[in-house]
Amino acid sequence: MAAAKKSSKVEDLRVKTDDQLQADLADLKREQFNLRFQAATNQLERPARIREVRRDIARIKTLQTERSSQTVSASKA
Image 1 (cartoon, rainbow, N blue to C red):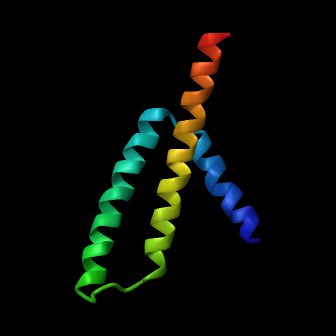
Image 2: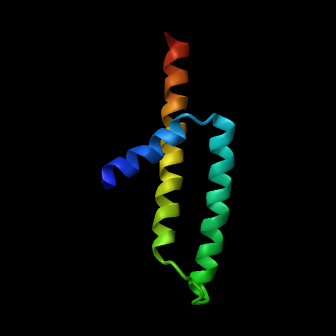
């Protein structure tokens, strides 16, 4: 079940445009910043959320890297 949930997140991200991914990335980075402050002041309600946000950021950055490498390889061909 976890694999299906993970692939669903990736598929949801794949259908988004580059601008939407960039906006999502900015939102997640802002949330990560806020979570770090909450953790430092012992006000964090869900510690697992830090991991979720970090992994979502990695997913978006991976997609952006894949897309940029595809455009570079397509322009060379």
